[in-house]
Image (cartoon, rainbow, N blue to C red; front, side, top):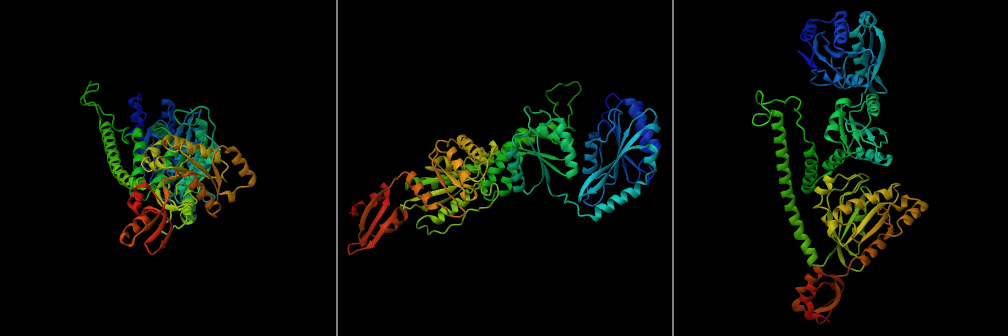
Length: 600
């Protein structure tokens, strides 16, 4: 059966191509004179390219008309240390006489035994043929092209010997693990954003091979980038043996499909990458549900049936729309859409239950007049380290709680954790660590994590932690403010905490402070415990005092009030006297009423 673009091709041409399946190629030869001659003649008649697939036994397994993307090769599994056992002969019209990057991409991605590009000619003996084989260079699978060979030179090649030599080289070398994701990073925004994409790739255990930047004023609706740059990427992909392409900006579903068709590998964008990092880092039930919700919301508008190219079937003869007009493809698409929408609804219901539980805890804190502080900031700015150190530095913080995970990586923390600490003036407050923000943070993630980020909205004070050593610090501050604005928390009382001051020069620090002179600033090093006591003092000054200082003598027959005072007030002084227990404390109105009869 002839595949590909057969529309308008006359029946006798198709029959002539069908007869080629009867040919048997000598297993020692890469092709035969009869096969090349027929392909040359028919390609000239059609003014179209032809593709023929031959297995190692010399049998023709597929013939297609059109560009190389129409070729079908029945490869069940591509081995890491051997070739696929198939070769492709592809005719080129005279105006296109070079082995293209698409040709060599197919050669490498499918590990073909060989790829022959036949440049058609009126005289078969004047045909020029380019041969491409897999090769090894610097321990990487690459291609070797032998150009402008005559038909006689091609037929004289000992094909089996050549294939055996290539496979011997593949076996003798420690080739890059094909299961490892090796990516080219493509950016069109800024070099700084592309560098951040590099770090995001590392955070996702992807090997970033090379950063490719193209500044564009307009976006190509088909490929996002220009076709010239696309061909350049295809060449680099082959040389570097990349199996993944990551774009720094969000792509549409059609752009992803078009790019994958040309590049013959997986293509994702920055949003997909960030969602994948979140999926790998999520540990609690809530964060896992939030990430799944974000992924489904991102996927839903991009949903496309994977079998759409097979299922354009109409219901009846002459029927236009209506009953019976939908094919299996459309039904599958609608089924997938309903399934995703139902799962989104289920996740929202589960999250609402978790939010209700957290709401009960929040009511208790409000009832006891416990103020709250939320730590926000760009990812990897040092928020978790600061939170852990503040808990250790706070006065009389004797309750042992597990530290928040901290590491020099993007999005080390996904789950909001709340801890109670004691300020230098003995007041108790809560301090919460939140998920880090980032430039171009996917809107789906902000929406999904809104329930978690309520701690930011409800906080009495925000600590905006900034990596002062980062050269893009001002841009990062703006990115955080953008997300805070989306949450409705941009105008909250905020202290800008310039962290990692031990890693920045005095000159750069002074320049940064000058740029932020209208903000409330403090310079700290969370890792080396610099100025943390001073930060606690500033927090105490900024947090509203909702408690009053009172003195009591609690008689010994009313000692049941002592545990209540210890639990719900900040004890300043406690002594045992003849009349009872003397206590000086900071407490709220509700607790005061319970003890007011014993006030001094």
